[in-house]
Structure formats: C-alpha cells, structure tokens
Image (cartoon, rainbow, N blue to C red; front, side, top):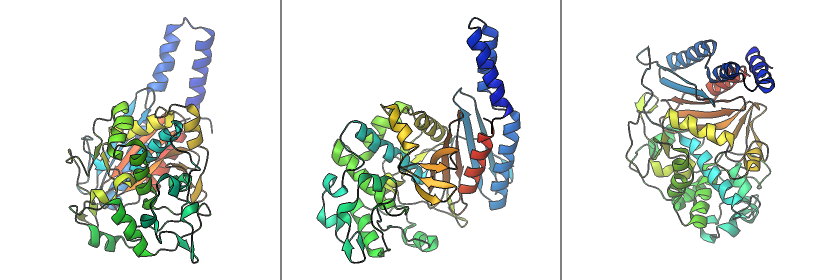
Length: 379
C-alpha cells in the first residue's frame, strides 16, 4: 500500500544520508513531512460536511502529523455552514479510559501492580463484590485479573441500561445527580445482566474502569483526577482538559440527544468517561500516547499495540488494554456521553486525529474508520 508520497520521502531520506551537508535537500525533506496535502484536505472536508448535514449536527476534526503540521475541518449541519472556531471543549466520554489505562500501565512499570494480579488481592472488598459475578450459580470474582478489567474480559455486568438509551437518559439525564463508585457497582448488580467467566469473552463494561480508578487511588494515595493531572495532563501540556466533576466547564459546547440539549452526570462516568477536552488536546494526547511518551519503557507501548486484544467488531475492530485497534491501521478510543460522540486515533505513519460530534445518537465509528483509512493512504 505504499503511495507516491512515501516513496518521495524515502528518496529524500536516502539523498540526505549520502550527502549530509546538503542543507537544501534536508529542508526539502522536512517540508514534505510537514505538509498537510491539499489532496487530503478536500476529502476530509467532504467527509465532515456529509456527516454533519446528513445528521443535522456539528462535526469538528483536527488532524496533525509529528512534524507539527495540522488541519482543522468543521461543519454545522443545523445552520448549514462551515465551522471556523475550533476552540470549544466537548465531553470525550470513554476516551477517558485511555487516561485510566495509561495510568495503570505506569503503575505496572513501577512494579506496583501486574497484569496478572487478582482484583480481590489488589482491592479486597467482599461487600463490594458480593453477587457481582455469578455465572451459572458459581461466583467467579476471585478469577478476575487486572488485564480482564483493562480489556473488558471480566464478565461484569454494566451499570448503564443496555440497549435503551432513551430510558437511560430519562432516568439519569439530570446533570446534578451524584454517584459514588459503590453506588454504580450496586446499580450493575441490580441489572443482573448475564456475565461470563473471566477471560473467556469480551463485553464492553464501564464497571471495569470504575474499579481501575479505585485501584489507582489505593496504590497512589491520590484521587485519580490528581494522578491524571500530575502524570498525564501536566506533563503533556494539555491546557484545555478538565474533569467535569471538579472543574466548571470552560467554553463547553452543547451536546444533544434526539434534538434536546443533554448533559451526563459527571460522577456517573468517573474514570470511565468524565473528561472534557478540546480538539487540540485530544489530538496531542493521542499523538503522544502513540509515540510512547507516556511510558518509561518502549516495551510498554509496544505491548499495548500488540497484546491482549479481544474482538469488538470482528474483523474490523479489536479492543486491548484501554485501546481500540482499528483494522491494524489506527490505535485510539471512541467516546459517547448523553450529548456527544468522539474519537481519537493515532497511526504509525506520523498522523493522528481527533473528531467530535455534538449528538449522542450519531455513530462515530464510520467516520473514524473513514478518516483512519484516508490517512493510512498517505503512507
């Protein structure tokens, strides 16, 4: 799938290697790497406009490469006009899980934890776990490992009402509602969704990341927000990334659910989905994640891109340890709240992207696949 641009870059690099003193050719190589081609901007604009006008919503996109070049695209399908201001923040929803998983992997690098540690050994709490994972009359809680939480293979039930977004929004659409992790897990028990033995299957479940947040807090003595700020948000210089349970929204766009403005209670998402951010920070985060800059060891990001994946939507999408592998083309995560959908993706060919949609019922998966495929064609 090598394209002309890649061949051109390779040729330039060969020339530079054989003639290190030729500054003109070095500058030419840097220019090629830095450009966002006009032939790429047009298809991106078309994709964004089609998504926005078809669904009568706002869609914003930022792509960038690791040479510093970037491009925004946006369209307001309600007003039928291009978007020119890309400074607003949105709920990134389950994109938060990448922050949680990265934190856990950092603790593993520090030998405070391992993927094979049992949940009940790291976070013992008989009352919390009572009746949480009963399969065919047998309790499997002692079989759940940290890796099962990270890649959603624990078998736990979900605390959201599955398959009925309308009912979920009706019950929990009041943004002033407050929940503790214990209450969320109690709600999951009440739903009595059928589980499975740990490691035997895949089922996306927010309970897993609520528990991971509790583990981070136990092992660090900090709440997970403090840990994220100190070890991810601050070091990466994310200037517009907030916790909706702690910070007042800053320039926050309005999200929608079936035509109504909608806001999810922040503590209903927690370490599974409470972060608010903007396109710049989202794209920067996923770019730095993809390059391994969040980790002390290069083997950590290699492992995250290689190991412990489960089929999410075979053969297109697989889910690993807090990361989605999309067609072996991009690595990232989707997010959905009551008012937004989003996606962050990092490719191995220098590109990364972030996309936001201000309507919870407009699926982000198809545009994320299209953008990943389009950027991959620029190898």
